[in-house]
Image 1 (cartoon, rainbow, N blue to C red):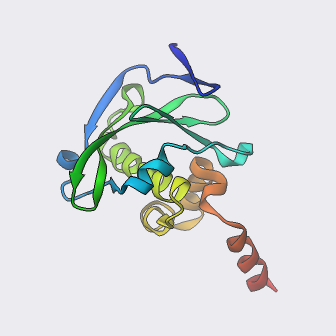
Image 2 (image 1 turned 90 degrees about the horizontal axis):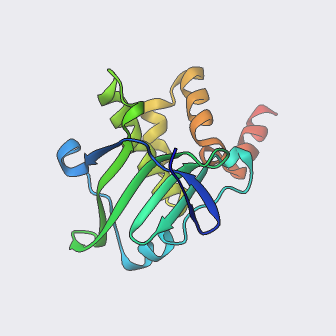
Length: 169
């Protein structure tokens, strides 16, 4: 397994890259950022506890999306600097581990793009887009468990816990 250290974090890099071109695989989907948002993205996201589940580590114009407890890279995204509809930066290409791609490729690809959007917009930029992934993948007990397993604390805020406590009284 090829490893790399970036900003003091050891990353187990993706083994076999499967490139995904967003505007071909997801026509109409725009993942664009302003200059200010880009600067925030380049600060990354680092788990404070095991339940935070993810580290998002910037390196140049690349973001490495890694599991916090293993350092395994799950996704990699290149940020391009070019004028676009809603800003000056965009993600057009991202990579997944080809070893994780099986006969359910389209489902995996779809879940991966929702994950990428959640990790970028909610995890780093603090724009609440959780409803997008909850509506599609979080229905019922099994769906809720899957989202907790994948995203941990990122799916719930202290306010979520407080309102649930108040509702149960």
